Length: 455
Picture 1 (cartoon, rainbow, N blue to C red):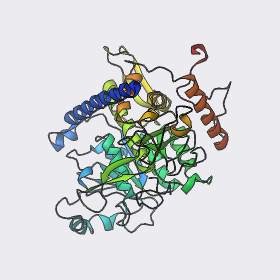
Picture 2 (spheres, rainbow, N blue to C red):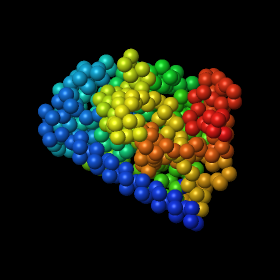
Picture 3 (cartoon, helix red, strand yellow):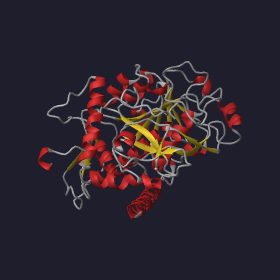
Picture 4 (cartoon, rainbow, N blue to C red):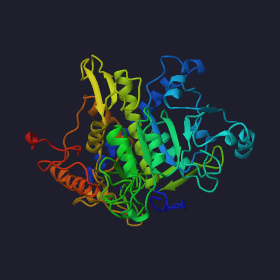
């Protein structure tokens, strides 16, 4: 599993004047994002179940965590929305369970055992009505399908991290750690983002889920976020975070000194929030603080899901996924408003566009904020890309990503030294994984690269 947690989870993956200016910009961006989240929640909360199932249901995105299981009884996953029938049919739902929401966790489980848990098979895709969760357990080999292991809880926390970043995400949860589990989401037409937080400890160069994530991203045009190891091991050869089609994610101390977490992978694509407060797996309303790339990764998936939601709202896109004939690789497809930068033209945004905007938005914290007692590693002013890739990403990145993709405020190219450093990273990943040959010194798959004419 990726990648020995410092929080006790078993082998799962689980930051002068310039600093003041950067901090001010980050805080301002967070306030804007909070306002956007509140606006989205206000506009998307149905006044009744019938309203939620109407033809005018909201724009949405589907995130698929692949993990140990999920606690469907926790308040963190509750919603008054009822997913429309067309969405359930599109996600292949074969069974609906309406969980009991009164009593303790054990009382709720006991009440539902015969009608729900004992009836679920490995071939079922189950909608848990009253929650944001659709789940499946294609691997089998579990005592209770979909529900989180009483002795673990990793999957519940991972899914909580997605929803912390985007409370409106539709969750297509897959219990398992195999390529088959990944493909249960990767081949699902309506899924947008697959997120995985497991792999070989120490990023050992051994086969993993790379063939399944290749199918998910390269063939089916989805986004994959993969956790780097919880050691300083390079991410390049990690089967979860290393393939060039995946977004490999390490950790940084967002609520601390903003520096790199020492025990997280090196030379990833980005670094994200390492320590978060996430839902418990064995009660109905408790939370705990936990750390690891396991949680930085789904948080990033949630951020990208939020971006897709907002852009789909802007262009009138009521679909999801990217692989069908109509969408033809587009994660966002519609028409820009007349008053926008797109001036009523067609809108089409794909994986490469999203990844380019993500990379452009990432930033390097100043090493001057480093606290020597924190246990973090200071962000080096020289080649910080070898520590945190393109840089760190948090909720403050959302507004710049959206404004870049809708054309209202394009972000500039990254500095040439950052681009050169990440080009080396990309070439190493292409060489190791045997894909995407680099042409003319510039990878055709690399985002945020200057065109020759812009040099």
